[in-house]
Length: 311
Image 1: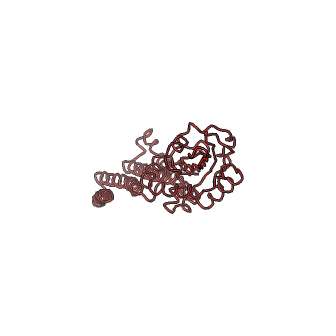
Image 2: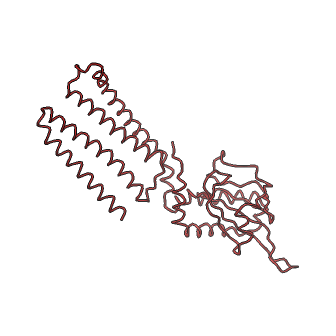
């Protein structure tokens, strides 16, 4: 069980850490200094696997000639699954790719692309391109030998920078547990609503349902609604949505949704107690007032929290 990656979140994190990401990618790409690697496929495989073990966000690498034609099949790292690997890439024309145009016209030998959706791994990625050149003895000009392209998984890269690599690996287990808890809460809500089935009997035979019993049915339905909303919130926040634990906005959103569910339940219960007091249960009025004041206190506290957390 896993949530779909939030690409808006990734782009936001990329903008925040862009300078650090550029330095890291440039450092890794520049560390590959041997031009002989352009024409050695086995060496490319070894380098790709070595880099992926040292840096889990390195996905693949391959070389292209001066005209942009890929020389060998893509060399994948250890972390790329077999179903996401594209093997038929030798001889592919890369001359129209943005990274090739950037690397062939830019002054530095190492350039980095903007984030893009990789066709090889179907993930949001960044590429570092190392251009290898040599001085032509006849023309005394730099002659391009080829380009080495290293692909980086943006999600893993940001997790690496945040120190979240181990937490990201175990996160699916947490999602599974949250999914079970949320599903059980929704099941309990369904049982409560089922228990309130006497409401239909009251509709068909009004003389069989007393006013106090009708309020009991409303309480069951209201409690079922609150528990269902709580279970739905857990599943949405912890299972279906991508949640950034390093960003205050995610925590603020979760707390707001949980408190809203509690406030609705408490407010409705206090109103039901007030209605009961009008029907003769005078002892319920004081409890209703205290519950309503408690709901107001929760609402004020939530408002203060939201204001302070934004500031």
